[in-house]
Length: 301
Image (cartoon, rainbow, N blue to C red; front, top):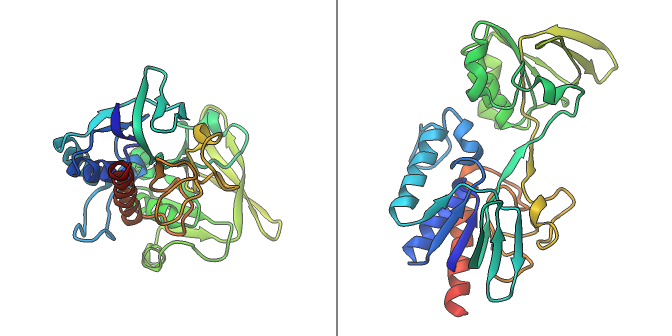
């Protein structure tokens, strides 16, 4: 029986583990893939206090090492179900069943897809959701980035240093990302922005060779590209908890800044909860708040 079981080893979950261990609580962190979450795909973090320049991978590794050194236990298993038994919770994975007095959901979110025919088939064959993972394959080639948020802008800037040409395809007439990133985009000679546009068709034989882009006015153009990087948002990883935890219409856990869910003893932290700002600093903040709430719950129980 663990004091606190954390689902997800992203910045929120690992920060929660640090706070929980510093309070001498037994901690198990369950992660389906690898530690770090989506931040590992960020080449350079510039907006986190103190660490003016650090890669997402290095940041995640430092947090993981800190949590592990404090005694947090990590297991790489996907959580498929959680049951509320009152004083304790049962957490199930394909390998084992665990019991814990409290649970913190820090599952983050996954890539949102365009929903186009052959998108899955072409993933890894010209379609990618991670510029830092796959950008090196497109050195001196022509690529396109879909999206207008910070992730899309950061992807385009990263690719601009590798590729011959980068298109940004955005369905609106202004970016949603930070002005600093937008200014850097404007200064790059090999980046071209297609406003009020959407990718409507993937053209390929064995691998992607072109895309069809439809403008708001109905005009259509074909772009010959070697790679398409999709950065159109995320989907919260809460599907397996929907029967127990209250979610909003978009699938995010209904919880405020106190990180409390509708179930006593179950807390939430990070990008999978309802919130206005989803950034690294807010994820780590959530981890601290959720762990503190779980600690209080245990001590008062």
